[in-house]
Image (cartoon, rainbow, N blue to C red; front, top):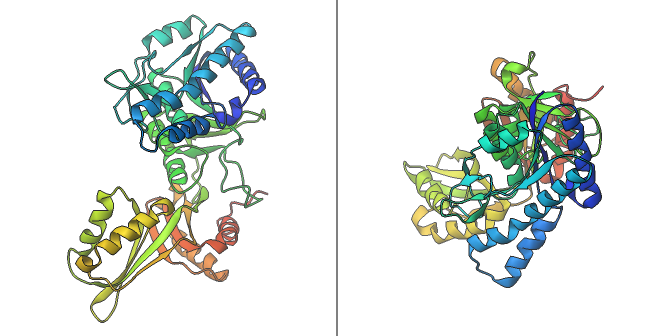
Amino acid sequence: MARIVMKFGGTSVANVDRIKNVARKVKAEVDAGNEVGVVVSAMSGVTNELEGYVRETARLFDLREYDVVVAAGEQITSGLLAIALQEIGVSARSWLGWQVPVKTDDAHGSARIQEIPGEEIVRRMGEGQVAVFAGFQGIAPDGRITTLGRGGSDTSAVAMAAALEAERCDIYTDVDGIYTTDPRIVAKARKLDRITYEEMLELASQGAKVLQTRAVEMAMKHRVRVQVLSSFEDTPGTLVVDEDEIVEQEVVSGIAYSRDEAKVTLTQVPDKPGVAAAIFGPLADDHINVDMIVQNVSADGSTDLTFTVSKNDLDRAVKLLEEHRDEFGYGEIRADKNVVKVSVIGVGMRSHTGVAQKMFSALADKGINIQVISTSEIKVSVLIAEEYTELALRSLHSTYGLDAE
């Protein structure tokens, strides 16, 4: 007998029929003798609808009340699933964030989990009762409802699995696992049997949408084994595990891409100490995250400084830099939204050379110009023109031998 946590996203609980389908999946685990906890998201589209009501009511609103409103979606789903389980003979009850309690900080709208006391729930699960948790929500130190930010139900599920000392956290979604790249673009993409926490974290942070970054970070910290699998197909999924559980590491496990990047170039920046700190300081103060950075020094004692920010932050970043133009002393500012970041990821890079060179050669062979490069121990990322996204992904996928047979 194992203790497992099952998590179902919005598309998996989109209507009553799908909630009943989830109940049957949960019952199958109970019938197999397992102790089961279930974390549910709001029905597909409900959180957007509730958020829309808030924004329609007021342009500037109290985030504490915002959390009260948007947390209602998961409350409804958890109650419906508990009813569906009871209807098919499974002992179950719903738990809201404040009832568990899922203790968080007081950062309303993007709270972070601090503690989950799980003793009472473990006792009830041991007696055969299924615990159905409302994901995405918790309780602040002052007793107010909090929410964890978009995608927070994944984080709720992993945190609950850690608190309950579950053997595994199964995350059911509308895909049947984690692929070597986006199968909608590369038809020969392969589903992975296993992937390491580090690789999954890089894939998630570089644009893969299967798992939320915070959930992977928490799984890695607490060594929670996570399985990603489909709500709609009865097929094995992909396990996200510690590196020690994978016998033979691939040099490259996957290729991610992000269309969320925008490029900013400042020309003729004075080449002297402290200039970079002066430029990036105001951006950091305004909570604008800078990702890739490259600097080209010219013979006249100036430099061109290129970096990337989120597309959503581009207008704010440009406005801020223009306001400080006299202070920074640069020539002109150029902004480009028509770029994409492509990343090659694999823990096998630690023990193999030539991975970056192979990437650069493959792109050059297709006539794709590299605008910016950044690297880490298990990742090489490049910025290219957005029009070459599909060509780059297919070429790199074949170059690293990731194509399905």
